[in-house]
Image 1 (cartoon, rainbow, N blue to C red):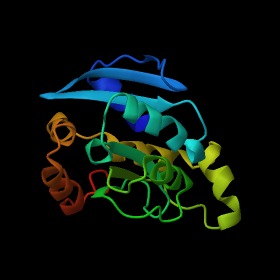
Image 2 (image 1 turned 180 degrees about the vertical axis):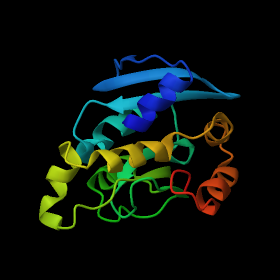
Image 3 (image 1 turned 45 degrees about the vertical axis):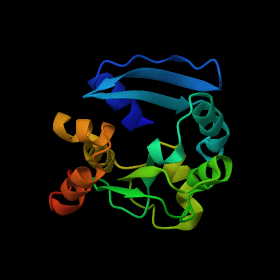
Length: 173
């Protein structure tokens, strides 16, 4: 949700209660793209229950969506973009795949690191237990320059992938 709020703030997009679903929604322009932003008002593991009806209402196909989420497989400060694939153990993505009936959405995976033990995962992801330095590095992963954010919104995914995956600096990869 932090990335979506950051994007809205960066491009002057306001949120209001989404009347179709439980959550907040905003609409605006990023570059030449007309975008809709959604902040589901549910637990991450149930996000498909909010995203899918919203997408159907506005006729947004899965392949037109970008889902941003925390990725424990990446160190804080690493961001990667991909299209499609499985849930890879991420319950929110599993919910989206199940409710959308498709795996073909785009994913901005933002590294938050791993707590070290699986038993600590829920507490790590839901509490403010990450060290401050790691939280700052994770936030820096999505603080991309306007050119890259516009390319992302306009669907120029190869351009975004080349930058995110090719730059060796932790805050831009």
